[in-house]
Structures are given as C-alpha cells and as structure tokens.
Image (tube, rainbow, N blue to C red):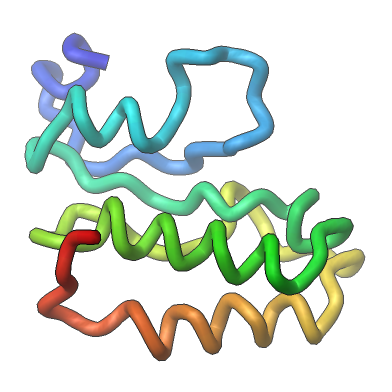
Amino acid sequence: MVDIVKSGVDALNPIEPTTTNKDYDIFKIKKQSGDEMTLVGNISPMMLTNGDQNEIAAYAKKLLQELGPGGGYIFSSGHSINPAISLESWQTILKIRKKYGKYPMKSL
C-alpha cells in the first residue's frame, strides 16, 4: 500500500470487503495511507443482498464514522449495485448516509 500511495494514486476503488487478502482491509488501508489517498466503497454487494437491515446499517455507520472524519472517504458499494440488492437494503444505506454522512464528521 505504501508503494501505491508513493506512486501518486489519489483514490483507491473498489475496496471489496469480501476479499480473502487480510491486508486489503479498508480500515487498515486508512491507517497506512492516512490522508494521502481517498478510499472508495467497501459496502459489500453480498451483504446488501443477503444481510439483515441491522447488519447493513451498522456496517455503513462504521464506515462513515471511522473513515469519514477529515475527508478522504467516498461512501459507496464495494464494486456495484446489482439487481439482486433489494430496495429495502439500498434505502437502509441511504438513510445511514443521510444521518451520519454530513461534514464535518466526528470520530467515534
């Protein structure tokens, strides 16, 4: 990740949370890159398809509260919004974004 930051990359997208690579964790990447790179996404389409609404809301809130303060995070899906995602799940993340996604954001 240090090499990616040093190469001048401004944003990293997608950051898919379902990868098996333990180092490709958005929270670890944020600690490594600081404010040198914007991170995008990380809401798993699989979670949006199969997760319950409380799980989806809790993870979306965690992303905003841990990655949003100070900027450098774009709230979005890990890679897509596919037809299997229910309207209810999509509305859940939109409600979380509306409630917690306004700047300036405060850390936990």
